[in-house]
Image (cartoon, rainbow, N blue to C red; front, side, top):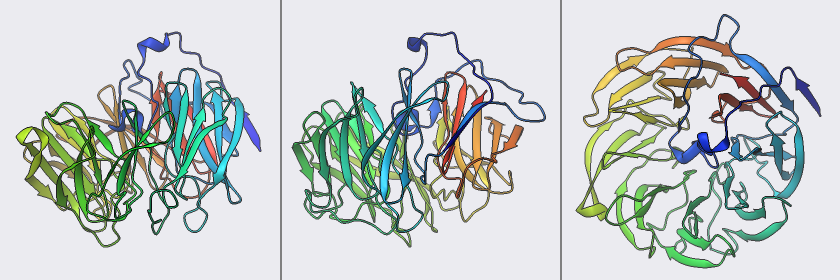
Length: 400
């Protein structure tokens, strides 16, 4: 294991100035509350501040709480939680149990940090709660042994969702399809039968501003909405594809929910009716078939890439009209956003800054990610002017 320190950059702002990126895609939207970011990276790309080589295998992203950075990785058959400070120093490494090593090996779901505790879901279905300071295990459940779920082809990929005192995960069982656990004890609060389907690599979303606040997620063949207070299924909408993979968290805004899948399915926009008790289709677009890259909503537009359709898209949020459909970066991949810019990380390892405008895919700067191993699937994170990129066993921090 080795560390490469290139430069240490300290941001002189208080933590209260910046949003805490304590879960998947920051706050599950992929849109980061950052201002004053660079608009020109120069010919060589932004400055690499530090890199850590030795995370092991994995596709999970970082979560950041206070002055600590958390990320998981696989060594052998064992999953480990790594804790870094913002200079890139590895402060702690803690085993959390067996991790997925049957195909596309490595840790999957990003950890969630909440009120002094760290929560994670392993590819083997373990739901683990750790004390943030000591990393001692507070409680641990297994979604298959404790809640009659079953694992899926490429291992569970879920970032646990916190909603008040509830921790939401998806065992995929006939009875315990989606469950709410007490986040402090792991005890079952409610279970929802959903459609009785397997989970689908999807991290759920909490929607608080409907008359019925609810959890939304995708299982093998359906999008479902669940009353967060009671666990009652409110509605479901069929969404199928060849491999029952729906890895993108739905995107919500303006009383509408965008759900995007790969493997030939594409996107459907649902409109909430009756205070969230039901939905109806607003539009669909098979071409926008992101498999694992995520979609971001900025104003009246949605941005992202296809998968089988090797294009980058801008879509009118309300109508589904294509504003652009363009080739770029020699491939497709992950989309996040901050400060009026898209940050697009292709599955060929190119990181690009793109102006977030609806008329064209305008690349303002790019650079290759040369450190790390295996697939370029982990979603980048932006925090306090730093772009964090995880590529297999390497974690990199760039000044942007």
